[in-house]
Amino acid sequence: MANETILIIDFGSQYNQLIARKVRELEVYCEIVLPTISIEYINKKTVKGIILSGGPSSVYDKKAPICDGRMFSLGIPVLGICYGMQLMAKSLGGMVERSPSREYGRAILTVTDHKLLFKSIPKKSTIWMSHGDKVKYMPSGFKRIGRSKNTSIAAFANLDKKLFGVQFHPEVAHTQFGKGIIKNFVKDICGTRSDWSMKSFVKEAIADIRKLTRDDKVMLGLSGGVDSSVAAVLIKKAIGHRLVCIFVDNGLLRKNEARLVRDLFQKHFKINLRCIDASKEFIKALKTVVDPEKKRRIIGKTFIRVFEGEAKKIRDVKFLAQGTLYPDLIESRSTFGGPSATIKTHHNVGGLPKKMQLNLIEPLKYLFKDEVRKVGKEIGMPAEILGRHPFPGPGLAVRIIGDVTQERCDILREVDDRLISTLRKEGLYDKIWQAFAILLPVKSVGVMGDKRTYESVVAIRAVTSLDGMTADWARIPYAALAKISNRIINEVRGVNRVVYDISSKPPSTIEWE
Image (cartoon, rainbow, N blue to C red):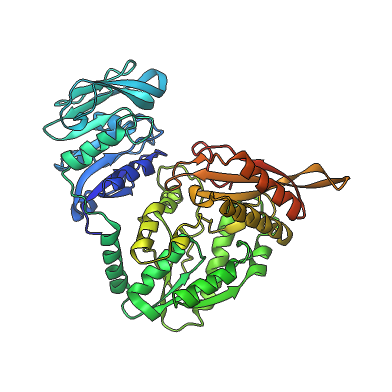
């Protein structure tokens, strides 16, 4: 992308995506990159500012992540957050010390200098702390611009060099004026334009796809979900008939999904679509596998095998397209050596074997979910498709806790159908970001028709969110929950109990596996 860029250096914070979201909301493009990023890479791009993220390490740990110290003398504004502030202080000659006790939670920030970073920020406001170390002595040329009760240097700055550090996390919702602080840095201090829009993205993406593929064909794995659907329509706009979509029925899909995909993409979008029934192959490969990471890897490898087999039947195919999103890359970051903890491995990230003769094309890989929906709207996709709840690439396999069998898939498919259809009937579907059912590996005693039953337990998960990075459990009315439960228990053979998940993300993830 040729846009002005804010680089976010990833030192392992689970809040990295929140930083990126806050920057993107200002219509400014940003990238999350590893600490090993080179000065040469920075110089090649139109980098207007750098944000050093927080992280779980101490700057004195032997394996603490560091960045090139020359970054602070490029004339580019830098904002260090938590660990990023401490690393900046240590790198420039200051001193960081262990706090007597770890400071975690809400605190009150007292601003001591309102220039630049804290412009229009009240003298006192609530912030969110999460640190075990803190800056004891500032580097030469720096001054304190904020303090809290337990942290005398809660924020510092070298105003001449436009270097700033905050010990708290402005990116989280708990920091009262965090959005304003980030805006002050990104817009005023870095001087960025608001040139990141989905209209500009579509124009550039189409040009990039045409340049990359030339006259070659592209094969895309189409699942019917929002991500792959948007990717398919976007690529078709770029290369037309040279796009061949492959829909694989892996036996892990929602009820009637195969028919819906055929009707939508063959009839409505006029896309060249090939449908493959590989359900038996997937179910067999997953036999006795209960570890969720192994499930994802097996499904990813099986997808690739199917694609390779189909690719041999199509002449001149040089590219495999996927609907990978930015959170997929970030959450899988540690697979490639980054400092962030692995939350889950995504089946479409890093799954291509070296022997594969197809190059990978991922036109949405720097977008968040809400941005993908905006792209879909920009290219004329219907609202009913863009409004579909997210569905994981591994499908029902990661919503079946334990062994994946044909029988358990059939049960969960029917449960999911009752859940979604009831939410639609009650007018709740579009008010919820994602809703789904999980088949648990336990059975419970019940009574049906005066007879004792011993059948499966199903958990219902429904959340509200913007893009899945953080989420809260949906407050579905009790009457609607009762209808969902009654329909599942009465209509789906093999289930006699329904429970509701009331966990938020964090600390829980949205999906159970």
